[in-house]
Amino acid sequence: MPLVQDIAHDLTQAMKAREEPRLSTLRMLKSELQKLQADKGRGVEITDDDVHAVIKRLIKQRKDAAEQYKAGGADDRAESELAEITILEPYLPKQLDDSELDKIIAESASEINASSPKDMGKLMKAVMKKAAGFADGSRVKDKVNAFLNK
Image 1 (spheres, rainbow, N blue to C red):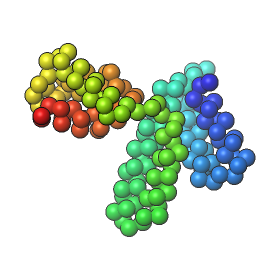
Image 2 (cartoon, helix red, strand yellow):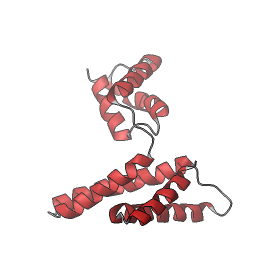
Image 3 (cartoon, rainbow, N blue to C red):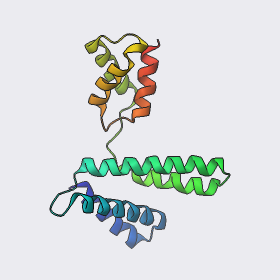
Image 4 (cartoon, rainbow, N blue to C red):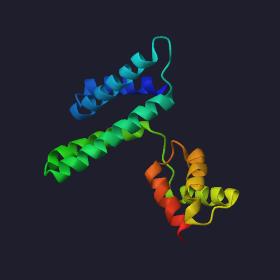
């Protein structure tokens, strides 16, 4: 079942269960997906990759907002933003764990003969090609940086 349908089903379930935080978050997500559909035009299907991109953008926005709220002393608002992230994350593909990511980095480094920090760009490109969608770019950057600075 396409992810858009899963989200619509979960939205209906949240309505029936009267789960307010989940309901408002899924409504916001559905609204963003409707905007994407309008931008793409009628007859063009939204792919799961499109949905993942929207969710990643929304999660990044929530993280940034939570940091700003914490810095401003509004911890309750920050917690609300973080709660929305926990509702959105299950719709993303399972993220690689550290050992899997380390293995991809080591394989990519040996394939392109990357061994020093000056190879950072080449190695990042190779790793992101293999781990796209399954690992956050900033996490990959930190792991690649640690690998090259051993």
